[in-house]
Image (tube, rainbow, N blue to C red; front, side):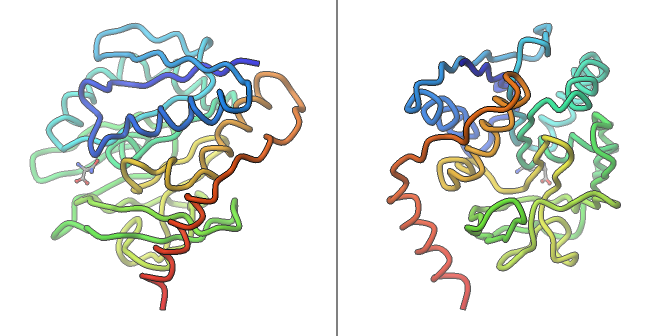
Length: 239
Ligand code: GLN
């Protein structure tokens, strides 16, 4: 079995080392004998979504998002078809905002990809802190760090999780991120997947099922360090 990961615009969207998420996806496949390949697409490259099993859209500053927004118009139709065909996507922070209809900032409105019916508006002050959420998809809480000025409104979509500590989508809704088909959008930055191997394995499992039909559940790996780190963060922030 083989998984091909598409990393979109690492030249523009790579805040807080989003690339670490790629390394995690690759390693957790390889450790199980699943072949893994990553294709990096820079801003002007053509993207053949039919060759991809997982797409990663990382975070960026407002300025970079503004630049990327022009490129997105070119790929919108094919990206939408990929999502509707249950293509797996992990979109982090700026990438999460770009999944939606628009991101309104003081400098202007950034047109989104219209892949998920949500929108983002810049609010007063940035929401910066550690964050712990409980997702219906996993038993273990998902832990991370958030830093965003945008507030994301997900309409009737399913959130990624309920905020146990931190701000989440708007700082007020009590929810974080979004799940739509096989797409996860989240404000949890950088090392989301190394910190949360259960999220990484969900993406791999979904990608394998889409490509190969019914497959065995992924073989467990030794995640004792990750579990210890997760417990430490939960103990620190959840009183
Ligand atoms: N520029 C966006 C915001 O501030 C996203 C930032 C990010 O990716 N960290 O809301």
